[in-house]
Amino acid sequence: MSNPELVDTVNDILKQADCLFTKTEVELAINKMANNINLELHDKNPIVLSIMNGGLIFAGQLLTQLNFPLHIDYCHATRYRGEMSGGELHWKALPQLALLDRTVLVVDDILDEGHTLQAILNAIKAQGAEQVYTAVLLDKQHERKANPDYKPDFVGLTIPDRYVFGYGMDYKEYWRNAPGIYAVKDH
Ligand SMILES: O=P(O)(O)OC[C@H]1O[C@H](OP(=O)(O)OP(=O)(O)O)[C@H](O)[C@@H]1O
Ligand code: HPA
Image (cartoon, rainbow, N blue to C red; front, top):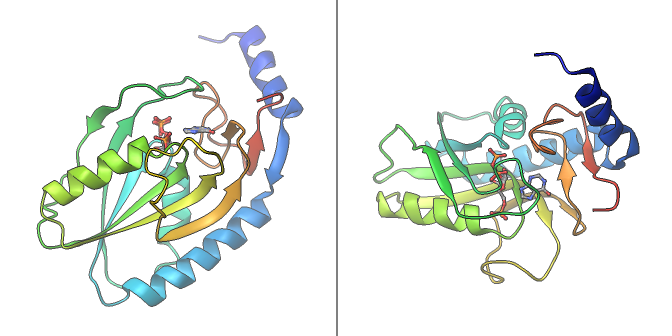
């Protein structure tokens, strides 16, 4: 269903947004993360678990730069569901590979309040994974973290407390394809 008014509105969101990081800057951050992950996980035969949908683009770009044997799987947990603030976590797809005694690298786009990552880590540990690492492209800076002591193993970039989209992250399910990290005007 085409909807010219909607298309205009969605285009305006990108036009009015503030670019926090360009494509080049994000790519550089992902390169650095890949180098660190290569050093740390090269002999661990890990499962790289992408968290859909937001983790899709980051995981895709990261994976081609990992230079060691690994398996790929995904799960889908969502608590924003097209909104700008999070609610209850819904599991839409669980990992298919057996995680027992494996090293798992969880790959997601953003650590915001951290409820999503904590729930995923709990689920992975409950399945008997030997070791769990986390890689997030963005860590949002604020005082609302579910677990303020938790730090991901690999972080690409830190961002201020604004609602962002691009590189897999959505604004009302749009602009996951935006080639940079953008903050919505006035948010
Ligand atoms: O740290 P939190 O406050 O829990 O938020 C982070 C999570 O929120 C987003 O997912 P979302 O629920 O929007 O699902 P989606 O990836 O399918 O868009 C994002 O991709 C992270 O997984
Ligand atoms: O700032 C955000 N943008 C997009 N998705 C998100 N999920 C948590 N925080 C965000």
